[in-house]
Amino acid sequence: MSTQHGKSDPKPSSGSCLSDLLSSETPHWNQGSDAGSTSWIQRKDKWKSAGPRGRLERLLKESGNRVCADCGSPDPKWVSLSLGVFICIKCSGVHRSLGVHISKVLSVKLDEWTDEQVDSLVNLGGNIVANNKYEAFLPDNLKKPGPDSSIEERSDFIRRKYEMLQFLEGNEQIICPHQPHQRTSSSTPQSSSGHQVTQEKKQYEKQPTRHRSGHKFRNSWGRKDSDNHKSTKKSNSLAGMVEFVGLVKVNVVKGTNLAVRDVLSSDPYVILALGQQSVKTRVIKNNLNPVWNERLMLSIPENIPPLKVLVYDKDTFTTDDFMGDAEIDIQPLVAAAKAYEKSEIQESMQLGKWVASKDNTLVKDGVITLIDGKVKQEISLRLQNVERGVLEIELECVPLTQ
Image 1: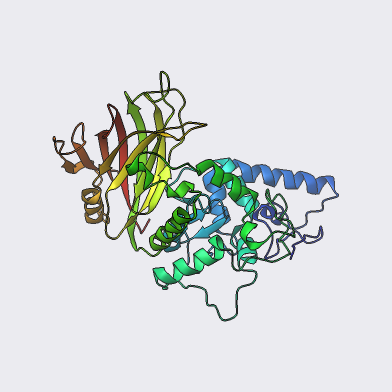
Image 2: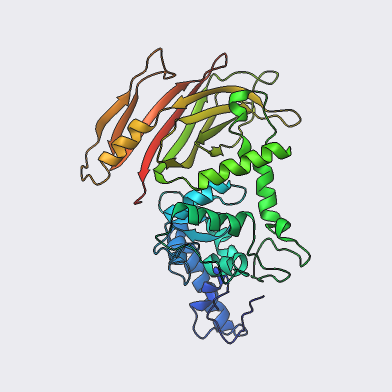
């Protein structure tokens, strides 16, 4: 199946890429005329000048993007950047459980967007193009989830759609101008996730670590033996069927006086794990006092587990070295966020604190504050099971209504 656009009809067809909306704003655009070309360029410049946020809002208004790609819920506020679909909050939790090598989830409103990210989203084509591809052979007896479907129904459908690729088109392919990665006609369903997914998975794929506490949470980056693969798949499946009560935005600020794991320094990165979910920061080379200022997001399960923090030294040819871990109890933060979710209080105020003591890993009290209607907590953690190191983290609890 392919989509083509004639010069005489500037309006995008249902299977067209979102990038065609540039030409759709020119009702009488003629590719061969100078006036038409100039008009198109002007509109393209205007489209670019709107900025990432403005462009993203316009993409949301496109046909097909006004409802969740997976369950049809109206007004989706989340995006799978790697798949190019707009999704609702409930489906976004399942997408996160797939792992970033399959679906990298961002918030339309809560995340900061770049022009490059919006360009990538435009190139992938939006909900109509994605569903034409990933639901090309949807069985007649299979009903898609609806807005009121259970988390189990959503999880089963989304995993079959994007992870197992059961409904993927066969030997044909949607041809989308500017599409960066394409399959060949000989691709099998197992290999048809494309070059983009393969490359992204490689970036996150890690070897098993020697440290047991870290080993448990590194299944998101792949394990080569079959037993571990089955265990990971089962864990991810369970994660997809968990009800979520909110989201936690984690800003990994910096590390101080971290342990040496190379000759004179280390190449540290941080893994955050909440239940069966895990995300990681970038690697900072040759630095024992790294500054990440990197914001990551995790869904909060109904039965709230501690937020696990693990630090590793990146090695190219050997197993990554363990550099310490810690746990954060986020239940007080979640409780405060629920209490003040609909509050109209404007001034900043302290809501509570996690008191530092010899029984926990806090360097100082972790104060929970209400700032500009947002419930936040600043935490300084002394890393455990290592000779030294402190990690500074900022947390924000986000209600599902956002």
